[in-house]
Length: 407
Image 1 (spheres, rainbow, N blue to C red):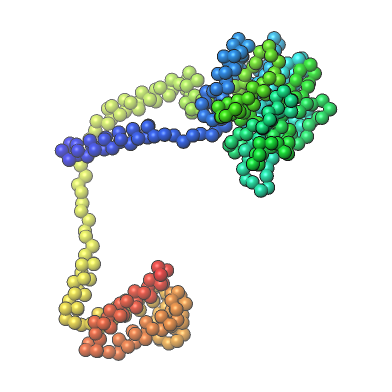
Image 2: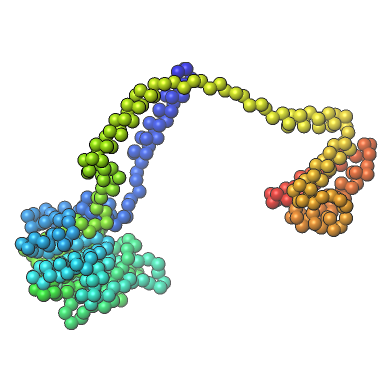
């Protein structure tokens, strides 16, 4: 390796190290992805909420990573099953299991922007999205109906979140616990929409809250909005075990590596290892062969431009302006023939109109160029001046530029 190559290699390594350091130390943008995962410290993660609940409840805090239909096979399990995510999508059989478990005297608490269809049909619920015709914003404004929980000024989430509400509920059995609307320059709820209900089912209860953001890191750590989650959770039976669902989480960690299917099967795993060993052996032994040097063949240089400059210089030195002008006229005629597909048989008004139409030039400009050409063609060497030659070159250049759409 030559000294120059070593310098290049060192410079490459230094530049690469600087780029890696810059990439590793740059500040990442804040993610508003609605993960609701206990591991995420992003605004819509639940790291803070999970930590507070687990510390406060101690042994009464139970985490499950399996779907409800598996969890509820344990007949001894009792308490409050807590679901928190931006959307919850139980299958119909799972809803039946949850309702049967609730009927025995247990509690289900769902904080989500959407409700499973089967559950909505069973509880006679319909939801919709709130919006303002004169405002594209959708900052939620929340409060409670209970006079002991109702705040004098509603709680405002100062971030654009969907404001979902119950359009229909079973007013005979179900109880309205919370209200919401989109913030519209006042902290008073003037157009209340139901967003938190209690639905009795058998000996148990189902609580549904349509603003899950109040339980997120953002909801708990901004202003006094932590009171929203505290007051909502006050409806859960005090001494119940709380079963925290980790399964229905948008941001849960999933192993999506293609190698998972291979490495979990012992036959495929050993086949994969043998392929890797074979590749390593091939590189060690076959990679030692050196390729024969390929000679560098320098391509021939294009001397056309230099040749043209030399010839034109000779003409200019001898002041043969007329001959140079005729050369330019011939090249222009060839341009009209090949580019505009118009053979020059007779230059009349009809021919000039066709050239103007196909080239995109005006009829006046096209007429002027052919008039100038005709004038020069009938001159001799003494009459054609350098000024005439320059005018011809400028006129032809402008004509070609307009034909190519450059001006």
